[in-house]
Length: 124
Image 1: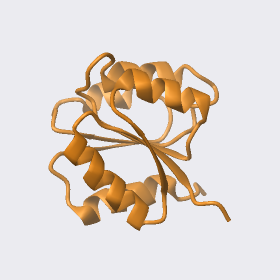
Image 2 (image 1 turned 45 degrees about the horizontal axis):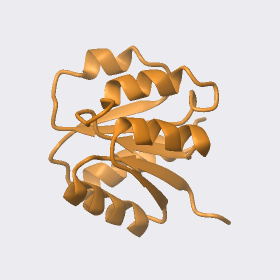
Image 3 (image 1 turned 30 degrees about the vertical axis):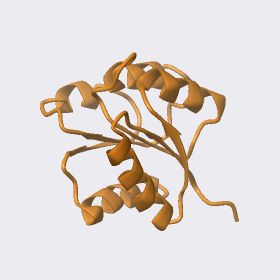
Image 4 (image 1 turned 180 degrees about the horizontal axis):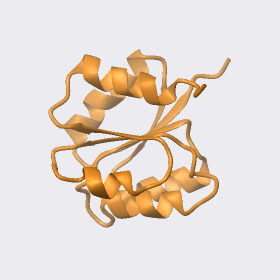
């Protein structure tokens, strides 16, 4: 069985490395993107099983990237974990369709992986 695929979109190299290590340790095949535009292109080219993204990024912020993704039928049902230091986004994020979870940085390993596992579990 092929590993589940996650697209990790994060502009901070250190955070990207740490999250990628967490995900790989949990059995995910990780694709990386460094900003919202690169993330959008990667998701459209090969829709992943899960997206983990930051909000504050260059070229295209995460909120606009998610709006564009949710407008694409192939990406509408892909679960998304938003991990951001930017608070006060819950109202904006709740308006987006699809499964989505929001965590505020800094996050613990157990909190991060718990959210990933919850989002990636099959829905009843």
